[in-house]
Amino acid sequence: MTEKWGFGNSKEKPFDKTFVGENPEHANPVELLFGEYPHSRSDNNIYARYENGRIEGFNGHRLIHEIRLREYNYLKESYLSGNEVRKGGEGKIYINGYCCGKFFFRDVMEALLEARNLIVKIHGHPIQIWKKEERDKLVGRKVWWREEPAIITMFLDDACVVMEPDGIEKFKPTAYRDEIDDEEDQFRVKNTIHSPHIWWYRDNE
Image (cartoon, rainbow, N blue to C red; front, side, top):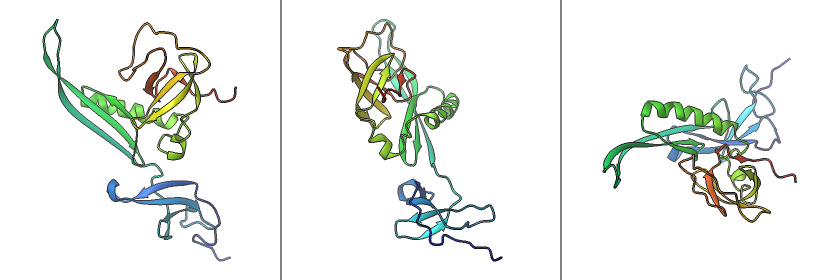
């Protein structure tokens, strides 16, 4: 029996997208889809289709990760203890070219561990934030914020959401602020989508 190879006459629709190229700024976007036959001895029948229609066998990264760490110094001004130049840093995680999370750090070695932890959170999040179609569904989504009903009214490009009370007049005041990005009051809250205080499953009330 003759083995059959190649994309064939597959009518499958694309199930995902990724990029081909070492330079993120000039990488080629491709669609991933299943072919009629495999293209390798490992029975891999996933193919990449370029924008010009060219089709190639695919055995690459479906998710392209990029970690950016940037150290800086800043001036901490204090009337009580005096001014001091301190160390700071910003880490960002990109997936398929989109910033899916960021964090503050002071030590680059610790930042490498934090980057790993954040990638795990991003992969385990119910929202695949690197996909535009998933981001587009965020505004209007009903969630729980600290055990109170809320609705997302805005999505920001730094992987943060703005939430407002939903069905209640206002949020209860909190006794402390435990997150750097927390800018809450009783009527509007801004927080990262990775906050442990957001529960994402309130759509089926």
